[in-house]
Amino acid sequence: MRRCPDCAVGVEGEWTRCPLCAATLEGNASPSPYPAVPLRFRRRRVLRVLTLTSLAVISLSFLAQLLFRPEEQGLGALRSVWLGVVATWLVVLVAVSKRRNLAKFIVYLVALAGGVCVYWDYLTGWDAWSLTFVVPILCAASLIGLVITVRAVRMQVGDYIVYLGLTVLLGLTPIVFLALGWVGTVIPSAICGGLSVLSIVLLLTVRGGAVRQELATRLHL
Ligand SMILES: [Zn+2]
Image (tube, rainbow, N blue to C red):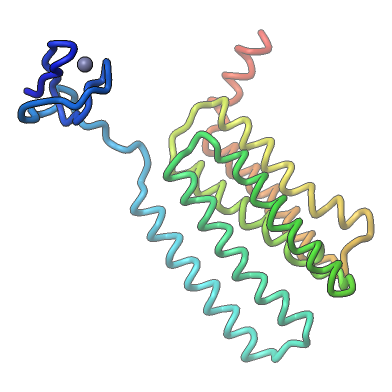
């Protein structure tokens, strides 16, 4: 067992510094008395599914470019899909590493990446590609990442309700731009809106019962 020379206490486990005074411990480490806490989500399976899906999506985007030989705008749309794949990965990786700030991270990700693209679009003579393609794809990618996360990670009902709200927000954002008439093509925003509805249904089927119970308790129904 390691010992702290300042506090004159023995410290079990792999500590290198005293947990009380942060002084360097002396002696040999002893095994930790606490059991290792197993992770409560299927990290490897999630990452495998995500890898296969990403490869499939990227291959399909290349195939589509080969088959349809799209014009400038269609090419931009296909390449925005890669941004979506990156965004989905970021969301899931953040969820797997530090789960607490996921909702905040998604809002920052969409706002920042979307904002940069809107500015870029503005600088290159406003073609509306940022609002037509990038924003719906970012929102859709976050939705997919969120659904993967919620299905794989057991979380507090409170967090879960936050994610449900975020799902609605992510679905509504492109729809608002669509309603304002700021987008070039309807399809990406409409797909994102549909995906949001689908995500809400999926989330409710995963933990709907727990949410109803929690709401009933909080609202004294
Ligand atoms: Zn100490």
